[in-house]
Image (cartoon, rainbow, N blue to C red; front, side):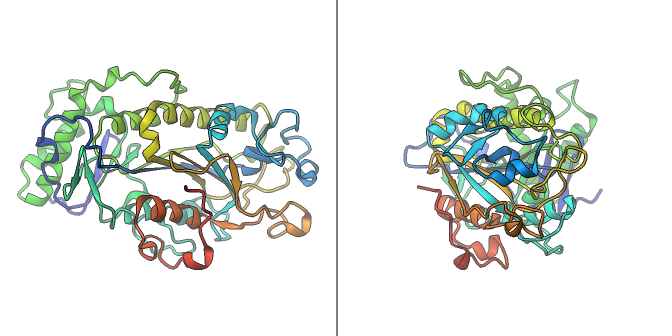
Length: 420
């Protein structure tokens, strides 16, 4: 059987992309405390798939037009968790309040992709590739962001690359992490298996290792062997009995489980540098709800999971930045079905140790009729690449933004400056 550039286990726990041989980083001594001089900076990207309603997430409660355009689905002023007298959080996001008050959480409103598409598929593709309006980009911006970064393998910095350097939480690798740099997809750390030793393992996992064992391609064999070494190491830590930190209360469900497993991988000191997770359920054309209902439910899951992840990281949060994004926002006006349709600008959250939080960044365009994009949507004032570019350049240290975001003029855009 011929194995070429990409190998996916879409229905299993692990996927591997790339053909670069991974050295035996796991043959070192057991992971201990990191060298005090080494700072493993991490970026976690979270995608809200389905086009989240930014206006009901970070509510412009001092904007009269907001209430006029949303008579049945607005968030009443008495229920809004006020942030600065103008904006406030949806009440289902109470778990974000401490992060805001501690100045770890920043908000960028009226942000998103400048491309006018209202297609979920195209908009998500553009935001993951980092090239709005360009459909021929074959890799993701988060993968490209790794090109110029120093490598951190477990507790040693140098030329070695950890199999967990770039990870996605899910059954297959997303567009955002596809590219030249090796990356893996972790669906469930408890399902990792090698060599048929786990009787509950999916047969595909055993076949996957067998293909590598008999491969004549030494480069691919190296990639596979190192990944399975990583799997064995993680299994030895008994992941099914992982206990989060005190007060890290993850809600039940796919998203909470994903972030709990990500925290586990980071705390295991496996050399994670970039990670990706997503959460669906944001496409609310009908009965969106207000303080209760569909949007309240998904916002509770979203905010509680992220807050638990932050608590679980403990001191490691000082070297972690979390950025959220969604393909586009929703219409400023509610529709006839007490929902919202596909819009334009949205809201992004930035959480982390180096973040200058407790502030809403970006220029607010207003919601008067004359201020709306195409007469119906919140207008865009901050390109999402400006937000991401600031993290990639000023925090991770990759200054080559022309490669990470081809065609984007970051000089004219200027950074928002939410990083300390």
